[in-house]
Image (tube, rainbow, N blue to C red; front, side, top):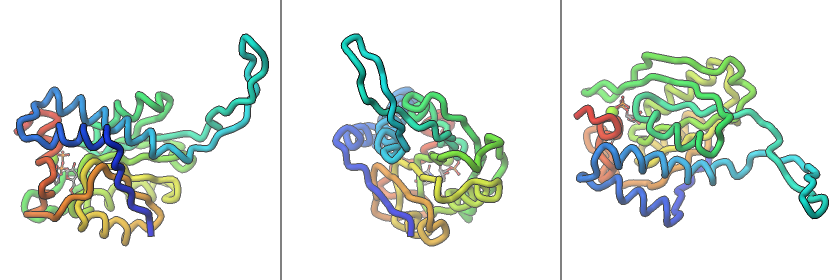
Length: 210
Ligand SMILES: O=P(O)(O)OC[C@H]1O[C@H](OP(=O)(O)OP(=O)(O)O)[C@H](O)[C@@H]1O
Ligand SMILES: O=c1cc[nH]c(=O)[nH]1
Ligand SMILES: [Mg+2]
């Protein structure tokens, strides 16, 4: 079963409290979502491989370490996942970006895929799938299945969200046992498909479409 990590760093928790507030406006919401994404990817990337290098400093030779060059892709689930991309790219600027478009039916909460464009070498990449909300898990599972169908190695995929519901975590762990999940918070439950207390509709809050 994939691991589930709640990232309880004080800076992440503080920033999450800002965007949970229903009075947080679009501009601040967007800014803080990206900041949380940066803080999260800092930790999620902890096991990226390093190589030994020698660097000439002004004072001598340092035995240092550099990233070994494993290629990275960040894959947002549209729309709301787009809100996390810049935060990840701030720390890993050479990452390629794939997109998976997905919307939930308003009544059934079933996900529907409407767009997919991935780097052609997705099979060789470490992949960070980003989406602020993991509710029923339907969108995440459909996105992860699409990635696998296009050659991604599930062992190289990490799912990064802001708020997760217990139902979604369980569903993804069952359907995608190789994928580790990282969240800033595990909330109480779902009510008509929405996470309680959650933060509302992340896409609408990011893009001001309500
Ligand atoms: O776990 P699930 O039950 O599938 O719900 C989570 C999905 O719902 C939201 O997207 P939404 O369908 O609202 O699309 P949007 O990002 O375009 O607003 C959210 O961004 C996730 O993708
Ligand atoms: O609470 C929720 C659940 C799904 N999608 C959202 O944006 N918010
Ligand atoms: Mg939405």
